[in-house]
Length: 191
Image (cartoon, rainbow, N blue to C red; front, side, top):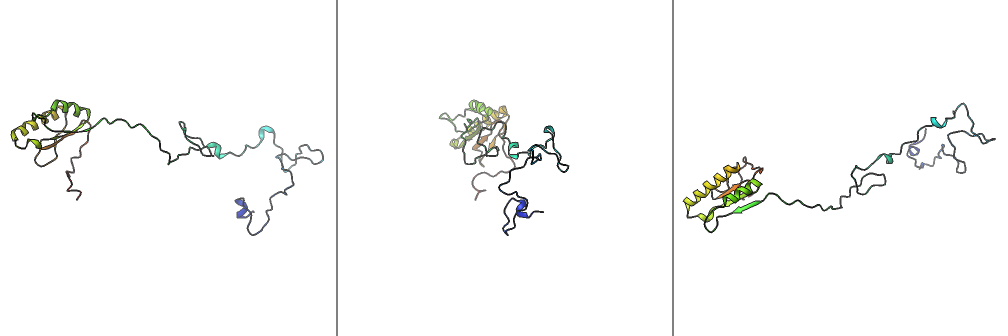
């Protein structure tokens, strides 16, 4: 039995000569024994001659079994595997955003554009309505809140107050998720 060094194909560091190696001048042998006098194949009882269709299959080349993914067009390793270069940056076109956050304040005539807000909310935009400029008009603030509530009912969304005085209102757009379990607004939860 060979040593551990022979198993890995390395020379023995203690100087033991390998016993299974042929001398460097010897010719390589084939699977079929050859008669020294005639040079033709010779069958011996210890080593039967195999016919062409009965030959042993060649050893499998493991590097040939690896194939890249079907749509791979990047670099390959010497073994034929797909090489993923993590330093290579691929620029992809960013899709245009389809949702927005809209800040709405009363105009010069102190009106809120609820019809335009309804269209935007139905498209998925979230509206923040600021009624703080109507500080001395409590009845007008109530009328604007009623209009906003009516618009939100048409869009089938809720209206959320972002402050204690109900002067900063949020109307989430269609398919916008609002977490109603945690009511942490402002900087106080961060401090």
